[in-house]
Length: 306
Image 1 (cartoon, rainbow, N blue to C red):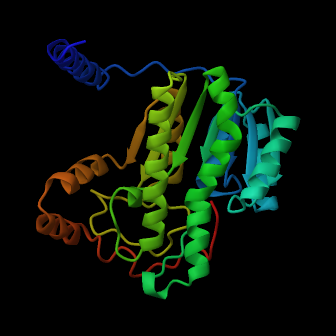
Image 2: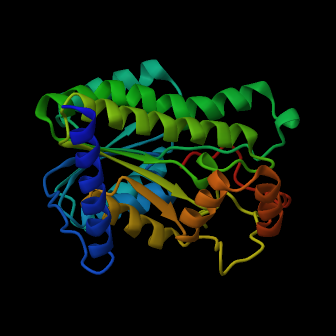
């Protein structure tokens, strides 16, 4: 196809895609049925992981829960069974350990079957300035928040590709889009998670596997305890998010095949500003929004996985 025809095609499709997006502002997208799908959630023992498990359970899915917290998983499993899950399985798994991820993944495939919805949710935060963070904690942050995604994809993506059916969900962070003072290692891990999920999504499209969907979630601070002590300068513009609200938005994004979910909605505008404003103006905006002091009173929960 020559340059003229390709250009016309791109222009016409661009117009249509924008019209389509505008229509969906008023007409909700049709939600897919996920009853019977095998959903694996890492970090399912508490926080958003538990809430997502309950939301998926209400839709008749088969749940596979991973965490390092046995008691937390038991409670999540109980809630999920009561909430309508067709079956619930849970496994102790340290997602920072590649060999353990592969071992437990093989066990899941034998005992449950192929995973068709993979939710990479496990995460940790040190909350220390870069020069104050021990090397071991920096490494652990990258292993849990980033490298675990590589290993779970390697384990479960082949079956999705073979069936041209599945969904990859990455629970990243707004700190994976914009750097934050006091979160160097965490931001690095989440930037990497976003880039990894985007790239794999493009690889799938390039090989014609458009039945395997990708959803990348980038929320602001969520009130789960993981970021206890963190403050927001303008709560109306950048609120600390309610966990139930976030879980419901994530499930809706999965059901409608939404590729990017940023929370709150103001993050879409802030991210756009970051990419188009002059650097000095961007820093000025960051200071105005309180990005330099978000972590000043951080307490958190010591290396707590979610």
